[in-house]
Length: 113
Image (cartoon, rainbow, N blue to C red):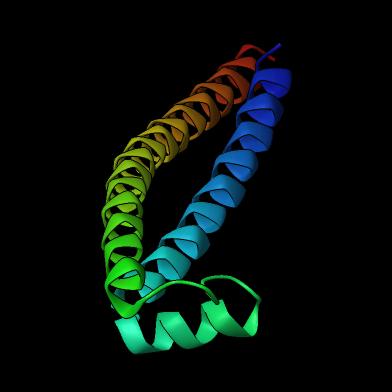
């Protein structure tokens, strides 16, 4: 019974760690986009075929809107990362507790024999 629980905890722990790495990657990408200057953004947009018919003022307005959106995404990702980190800590504690219980049960079983 506890063996299955530990395996389940370990599988969930691996899944949470993968999620945490994905969140970290997304946060890095969003932070990089936030640091992008207006001129760099205009160049990137025009190379991809966007913003070709827009004035610099319109580009600046769109850039500002994108930065606000990126900032809100980054804040949401940071919140999610904090929550994920807490879940990972709880899983590690549960795994350690389950292992201690298994070890105590095994020792108790050996003493009975």
